[in-house]
Amino acid sequence: MLQIAENHFVNGNKVKPPYPDNHERLIVGMGCFWGAERMFWQQEGVYSTSVGYSAGKTTDPTYKEVCSGVTDHAEVVLIVYDTETINLNSLLAIFWEGHNPTQFMRQGNDIGTQYRSIIFYDEDETRQRIESSRDQYQSELEKAGYGKIVTEIQSSEKFFYAEDYHQQYLAKNPSGYCGLGGTGIKCSVEN
Image (cartoon, rainbow, N blue to C red):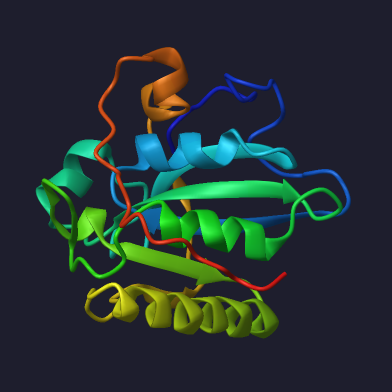
């Protein structure tokens, strides 16, 4: 198992459980995890974020292994949030708007299974809310001429933390690469 810092580089909060009461988690994959993580840590009510790998077929994968495509893992972000400050629908809007969910196994110039659009749920109610937000956003995308959303919606799988140098990468490297751009279409998920 990889060793990472115990505290978030940006806000100093714990990145591993246990988390405070009234905090939940959401795991999303939306392309390169560096820029995706930054989108979420900037939100009021987000306690911590971590990047890692999920939905693959090996244990404790490395970045090099994931990039090779042989493990089938997606680059993902673990978001821990205070449910009294920010709600799931706000996070879902950031997810849908922050990338192009109609691109299959890629985001922009980043191509491969690790860059696929994917979101995980822990409870059936969360799955239903994700699916509802997807359907709402699909309608908005179609009006703008986009195709079908290809985002995978899955029950949570094991989350493997990425190497420490990837954690909060764009805070440590402000001029670092971020290939995410989204579609420019607003996601009006009902709160």
